[in-house]
Image (tube, rainbow, N blue to C red):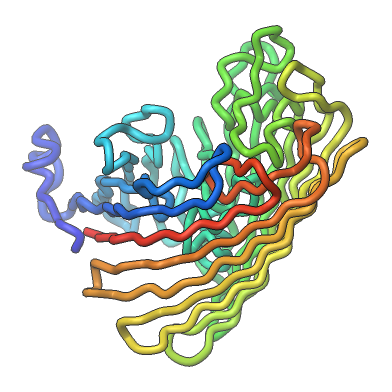
Length: 383
């Protein structure tokens, strides 16, 4: 249940400026559970889920009516590990999002640390990540459908709907003195939602991705550089000067709560620099093909299944990954549910680090063999 807080409670300094026209909403998700992984770094593991399904979070979302159809809006969202009480997103206070802006009949303009349409319109609404989060992502989330990275220092515009269509653009400032292109990022997207049909298409382009989105403290030209990536499927490509991502998806709703979707993404790492942890030059391409279905059998029980096939190609190496997700989700109430899921992944070929490809489901940690199996039981509460 979302909780409304008077500005007098949350922001006393604003109480005299706006009272009845303003509101702040406290919201969040807490999830905990147990994982079984048949092979993680060479051995089987039974442990806590640690947010691998919808990371635990709390946030403050606010609005102020400025008159004339204009509103001031903001969102501050903190991510945390409920099993240890520690911060997520690299220790940031509001690592999930931190933005403010204006909303009118002509759309919404916001500035700060934000999500993108690849996550909002394709990942959340059409892909398996919208059901299983990290363990439904494509090989460490190389296409950002699960918000592997957010957009710092960004300006985002989202249009109103026109006959079911909505347009979305993001531009992130690099902030480097004397060179406008360093760390620059942009995205263009369009989505459609009307009746039983929904779909989206998005393209984003990222300069200097190791620093601008993957949180490396030094760029690949520095001799101390180490790849910030954790998934061997693409960590060896993160010394690229540029990363581009194209994504598209279409879905069809049926019955009561049923939906079938197809998703395609293509990520290209260009102009890679060979370093001690990224043994590649030239360009690398990762393509993912996904189909998923979800269906609410009764109001309290949903079942879902997905299949994803990913290809990785770079000079002198290629790898292939197949993944299956399946499981039921039982709702104890509108706010609390129990999710059981099983995931199987198999890898073949040579990965981005130049070694034999091994299975790596989401953020669970790599297997030492081509196959990895995981089972998760999660209790989740939304407020």
